[in-house]
Image (cartoon, rainbow, N blue to C red):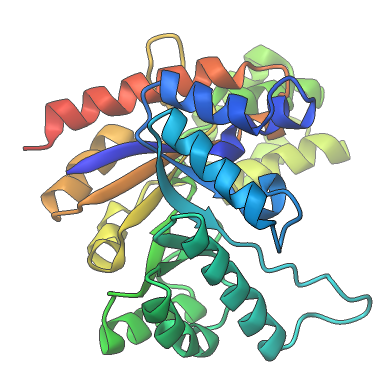
Length: 322
């Protein structure tokens, strides 16, 4: 079974502008039909990294109040804690251990972490994951993919030790195929004419090189060159065969998205094909909506975007999965 949940990170704009508090985020997630929640610990946990017992009990009560599953505790490895140096391996180990303990205390059985934790450190965490009854998933996030050197090491580790306590959290942002509406908005804001932009996107999707694009459209301003850099580095045909490597080692995925249109469709990330692929491969777990359109346009209503995403994904799962 594929369940549709949500990362509370999706409510970032409302949370930071104080129109929503944490309970509002959980309440709205429930109203939108999501099954469970991911909390980004450093963003929303009071007194992180060491919340009080009182806060932990309060948060568990909020989840129970709105009938929401504690799905994923999103850990944060802050490599910049100390001026002039990154965290040491021992410090990364201790930060991760602390997150594991609090995840367990809050009722989470998944800890999502970042590739700042090396395969070697991750392997050392296995006895502690077992002790505290959590599964540690390393997020595979753009611009990485399964063929990046460090990810070859991760998959070799998963193959060797199994995936009962460690694995991968695929982020759907690695499968962006077509420029979305908010990318287009940013491009127009940079000074590119709307009609010209549509022509540029057509040329891009027909395989025109970046150098030829700059010459054809006389692109020379720094902001406009940055738009082209982003387009050529971000969008490409989705390599859905990567799921064949990821699904056997995954219990949880990030449903990254940037803009869902009025027809409740994502024209950027091929979600129908993704759901079909992971269903065929036997994936059983959660996909958590992760809205990131606020990086392009903070005025877009994240709640409406999440409503559209929830409807789209529940429809796709119903249509595709057995």
